[in-house]
Amino acid sequence: MLNLRTIYFKSEEQTRRAVIALFCLLAFFLLIQTFFSASFAIAFLFLIIVVIVTFVRPLFTLGFLAAYLPFESFILKFIPDNIYVFARYFSEGLIYLVAFVVLIKILRGEIHIKKTTLDAPFILFVLSLIAAAAIHFVPLPIAFLGLRQILRFMLVFFLVVYLQPSKSFVKKLTIVLFAIVLFQSALGIVQSFAGETLDQLLLPSDSKTFGEITLTEGVEQFWDPGSRVFSTLGRYDRLGNYLYFFLILASGFFFTMTKRANKIPPIVWWVFALGIPALVMTYSRSSWFAFLIGFLFIGLIIKRDKKVLAGLLASIFIVLGYLAASGLTVGFLADVPGQTLPERFFEVFSYSRWRGEYYGLGRVFWYVHTPTSVVATSPILGWGPGQFGGGAVAALHNTSVYDQLGLPFGVYGTGGFIDNNWFSLWGEAGTLGIVFYLWLYIALFRKALLIYRTSNDEYVKGLAIGFAAIMLGVAFNAFTSTIFEIRTLAFYLWLYGGIVYSFKSSSLRL
Image 1 (cartoon, rainbow, N blue to C red):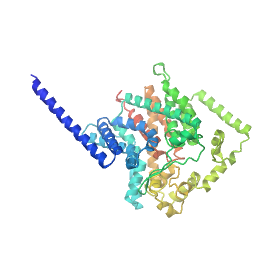
Image 2: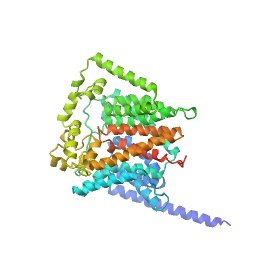
Image 3: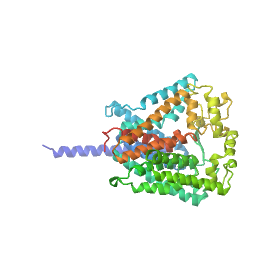
Image 4: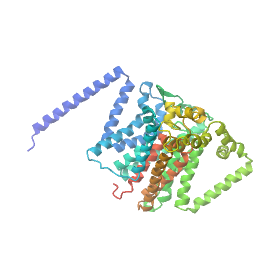
């Protein structure tokens, strides 16, 4: 029999404890504000909320991170210096926090150990990097930061596989991300008309450092105001990367969701309507070609769509016709401010540009000297993480390998990075390491194709073939930038890799 008096007193005791806890919490934040700052106290409160949410719903944290990253560069412009270092690594810290929660759940038996086809190549890849660091006596801090730079977003794949998101969650997340694409596209289109006024508001021009480590490199606007749009992503190429990723994903749905019961969602049409013009306005050629590779892979190779073939042939005819009619001298084109759209496109094939990039220590220089100078001197295991070509080298200003080999410090002799992720991995992990990485990458690509061919769900098929096409676009893009390290693409690559891989199980929660 229920005792109402006991229930009342228990409730009263719980209320008293809650009031005391709230009072202590407020007092604690007052102390933080007194000894630090109000911004630090607010940031700390936000961090506590995020930690609590992560322990309860870790997938929500990954979803929040996916929505936050496109705005991170813009938000960091307004972060006070006293908490900047925490804000800069906040997004990356969330990945480690989710990993910690997943580990706890595994130890408690709430999540069982899961095997994937990527386990073996991933472990061997990591071991090859560690072996390279050991052989070349890479200082521990440099080796650790180099490993972190390469592996941090790859962890997201395994986290998603272990957390096994439901199809409902994936649909909602994808709609949210498509909505963000629409916002970024619309903002980019407005930016092309607004010009310098909006550019200055959005551009993260200030560089931030912590000791000798570069936290954020300021972006120098070497292009004409309004000529290359970048929205809130900081650079025109990053916006281009972000847009082509989701445009290819939308293409997967466009080519597969044709049945009446699963008609193409209206938001997909809007993504094309706003995303393609914004992609063009970025003037990011590698993003243009990455999108074309992904779109044509689905339309021509997979679906064998005659309309796509006709469109491709018509486009080639128009491009060649323009070239003949305009009298444009392609071989002498160079990257200069004020380029027209056709000049920007045809410059890709310019001998003058290739020659200038080689002698100007640009990307073409490293196409030649990475295999002949860097890999040739340490061909099997490479020079170790944090030693060559990537973001860690640039952030740490680590010139040791460049000095030893008599090479300039990355692109233009100052950057550290070489604008080629495949070659930077080759230089750091060696031939053995790059083989393991390719094994992992190809295994995930083949798994996506297998899911596309075997699934009876049109949404899953669209997601799988869209992701497979994305991997081809990213593989191309990695020859022109450090794309596997850039959070506004690499995070989504491994996030959707884990999502698609999760669909291989027929027991996926609907």
